[in-house]
Image 1 (cartoon, helix red, strand yellow):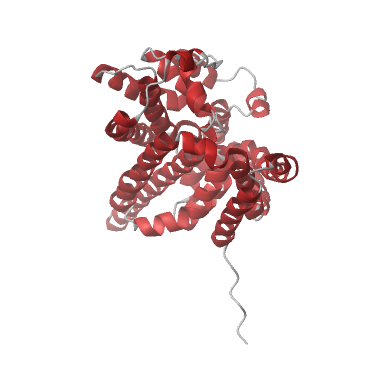
Image 2: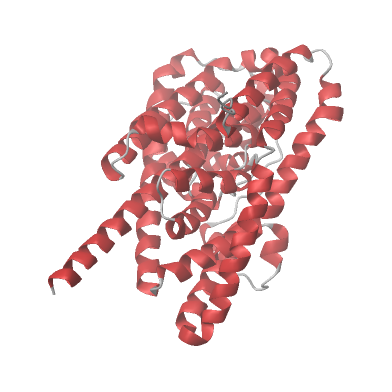
Amino acid sequence: MKEKKKLSLPAWIFIGMFAGILVGLCFLKNPSFTATWIKPIGTIYINLLKCLVVPVVIFSIADGVINLKDLRRVGSVGVKTFVYYMLTTAIAIVIGLLVVNIFKGFFPALDNASLESLEYAAKESPSVMDVIVNIFPSNFLQPMVSTDMLPVIVIALLIGAGVLAAGAEGSMVGRAIKSVNAVVLKIMMMVIKITPIGVFCLMTDVVAANGPKIVGKLFLIIAVAYISYIIHLVVVYGLSVRCLSGMSPIKFFKGMAPAMITAFTTTSSNATLPLTNECVTKLGAKPEISSFVLPLGATINMDGSAIYQAVTSVFIACCYGIDLSIGDMAMIVLTATLASIGTAGVSGAGMIMLAMVLTSIGIPVEGIAIVAGVDKIFDMGRTALNITGDATAALWMSRIEEKKAAKKAAAEANA
């Protein structure tokens, strides 16, 4: 007898997601039950992922830098990756603005009484210089404790660069980093195996807590955001993997499905990082490249968040009866691109940066309260988009490095 083929992890994640939707619908009238008994299990899953974020980033980036073996190569990969991320983010904002302007005639202008009742206490958005200064920590351990990812990435880069600069004397530290990274990855795989359970619990609570009622009230703006997400996903990322990485978009999206579903339910780029890394490695990305590019992307590459900021800015402006000019649109592109660098890869961070974008174009920050009730719905889609963009960069940079290696080998053979 032939042994029955076991379901793959992506299949189980799909089952967990749809089972969560069905169970959540059953508890629409009693969301407190899911919040009390089901959501905590999902929270445990999230906590396990979050506790791995810092060690994964520290040791994977340091090991990736060490494996690149040349500081000039590290700089080359870093610059190309940063430019790619900023370019796709700017394109994402333009797509969001184009789509939302098609539908803005259908957005209702709220009456003064409704607007006066809005309250939203916005956290202060950091200035550009504050973001730059905070990248460089004054304490080695504090960024790790607070999971402040930009300084953590800097620390990891410095460790890797230090090992390379030390040469033979640093080789022992390099081997230790590689060994610890291997252990961390094994722990990561243990946690990934329970992803279907975590996805089920989180999706159950999201559906039970939000239900169709609150989503229906803002259905149009949610639909506009998701149309923009899908256009960016299919057109920009599809063309990227086809033209830059030489891969079939269908193969790419199929391979990234587990990470995309996990990002959709966890709403955290950082928490999804281990699974994203596994998916792109299976798709052919070089481990030393993905371990460097993906953590960087989880922190500064926020295409989904950028689309969200563009779409909701226009929507909130319409609610206030404000007609945005071309100059305002250009300011949204600039501010949202810069804001994406400072948007942490954690759930809900996009709303903090939305306050920065609204302020830049003179829209009352209190307008965020209009969309705050369904932010979770926006967040699910934008996080899935964010991590997919990170994966396209890892594949492209891997292909560039493979071509360089092939040219170098050919030159040495002909020498």
